[in-house]
Image 1 (cartoon, rainbow, N blue to C red):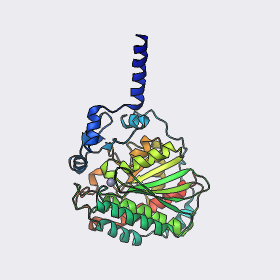
Image 2 (cartoon, rainbow, N blue to C red):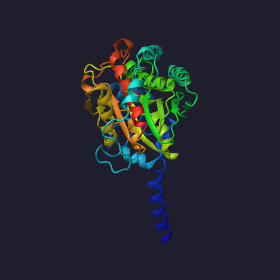
Image 3 (cartoon, rainbow, N blue to C red):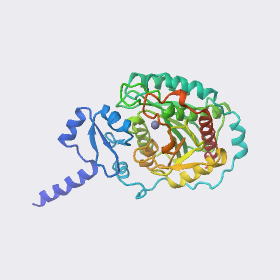
Image 4 (cartoon, rainbow, N blue to C red):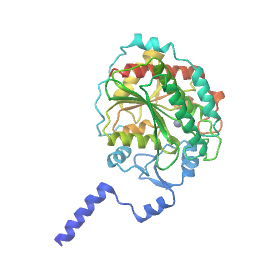
Length: 373
Ligand SMILES: [Zn+2]
């Protein structure tokens, strides 16, 4: 009796700590199915890789693929409605005004759309950049080589591939060392989908545009041999369209290795803006960092707009669920954003280049300002 009670107690605590997989779960995993959540309250459902894209992504249903997430605190945050959070991010006090205008304005004169036009042409010429396709892997090789080439202007910059066990497309990380190892991160996913695993998916606005704006900021900072107080990182994620896969693995690694992250500013769509204003989203983000992001965007690009984009919207959710302060910057509120998302029509010809230029300038300004946090 006493022994039985002891084992029952032990079983309960083991279960809550590690949630041993049930026979049904093991069978689903063996069949290659993936466990996705479409809302905080959704316990998760097992779907095929193809259904993730066709039945969810192509229908604008946001989701997070939690199949490989083993951190119970991350899962708890992913199961808590926005605004009801009770978790602590690393505490950072952000300024209420910009303070490095002379340096930023000098660097901004070097930002242009010349290189972004060339890069985005190449990115959209891949048949698609689906994270499980050979095209997606080839796009990763091209992007890695391009980041290395851009970074080579400053030998202090390192570029690494962050590989993923479940698919061949790597995430890519460039780092400009600062005087401190504290990190300021700008991010964009580079995979794409045209609405199915085999569809043409040029992914011009979503998210070739985000890729080229952070790459342009890297180019200008590399050429100027910029070194700040904080270390700056440029993250190019794999597998976002599959449920935030690349960013989930990167930030799980950063959490487990105890990295200090002062800010993550994610950009997913930066090339289509009828309003001509940067849009800063307000759900599933860090409120303080979002306010600071708006201060910087307003100071260097003018008035901004706001919106919310829901659960599993983009890679900032991975940073946030791992306890890091994250913000999300987009090119437009949802209602007037590109109508071509996740289709073969998200083409280079639909890109508004003044929008790309605006986001590249914002990215550079944010990195320089936040390098002094
Ligand atoms: Zn996207």
